[in-house]
Length: 327
Ligand SMILES: NC(=O)C1=CN([C@@H]2O[C@H](COP(=O)(O)OP(=O)(O)OC[C@H]3O[C@@H](n4cnc5c(N)ncnc54)[C@H](OP(=O)(O)O)[C@@H]3O)[C@@H](O)[C@H]2O)C=CC1
Ligand SMILES: Nc1nc2c(ncn2[C@@H]2O[C@H](COP(=O)(O)O)[C@@H](O)[C@H]2O)c(=O)[nH]1
Image 1 (cartoon, protein in one colour):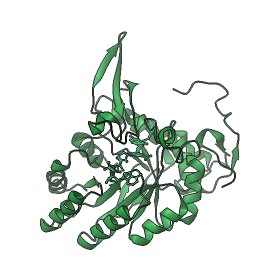
Image 2: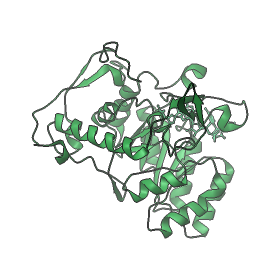
Image 3: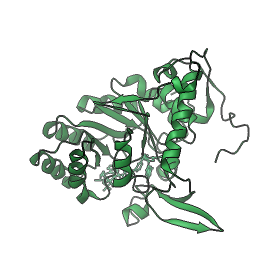
Image 4: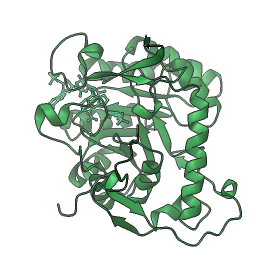
């Protein structure tokens, strides 16, 4: 790999504007059979999404992926969402009981519209076998498989039947995989995304490392159809998890899915816990993301997200913030 870079090393180059107002720019994206307002999905983590947030997002035209950490609730969740006329989007792992869970869904004639296989190291036979199991029993579910960080992995998972792949190993804010194992796409996630996207024949979801709204546009430029975000969605009023008061300021917890807090034991820990500033209402962030992305589209010289895919860019190696503090 040459020319590796990450989000903060890149600036996109403006093209001539063709709209009179940023409100003319359309940020919607189609994934599978549904179209969503934004190419953004909150991470399927326990301090980012719960049933209430999933319902809100689905009802308001946003994509969501429910986490897999309360497995016993998933069947009722799928049924409830579909009875309300909404899409069901859940996560699974790869252990033996997850195979049984897919069989239970099929036995009950419940087909979630989206199933995400949520594993740290997605380039594995465990994930390939699970993709094939889901496609055999629930052929109409749109399967997102990951996480991966190489073109070879993207091709293999697509070949096994995945409808989309999720790229990103180690760039997450509460991730310690890069430190504990020495592996991953941390520090060059955007270049890894470009590398993977060149090999992909189906949509790619860029996962982890998004620190600013501009990073969403950069992800689209380098091949993402959708972007999964944890830390920017953590700490909202609606976010699950503990709120603490420190010196009169409110903070909320955000922990990794492979952290000791999630696992309940200190085994193969590759995630940590942190506190993020309380951010207010989730909808305010979604609205600001939409406005910022509309502005990105206008700078790209178009009216739709696809315009961003063709813009030129420069590599400015770690200098775009000029010492400004982002967080
Ligand atoms: N995107 C990222 O960078 C990362 C994300 N995570 C998140 O943490 C959560 C836990 O992930 P994960 O540990 O995969 O899930 P699980 O703990 O559910 O593990 C799933 C299965 O995969 C096996 N497994 C896990 N990692 C490896 C590996 N490196 N090599 C071989 N087998 C492996 C496990 O066995 P055993 O435990 O016995 O090895 C287990 O049987 C997920 O939500 C995941 O998204 C975790 C790390 C990185
Ligand atoms: N290495 C680990 N990665 C994790 C863990 N829990 C979640 N994740 C990944 O992070 C992203 C969110 O990243 P962010 O930069 O937007 O905060 C999430 O979608 C997972 O892929 C973990 O414990 N270890």
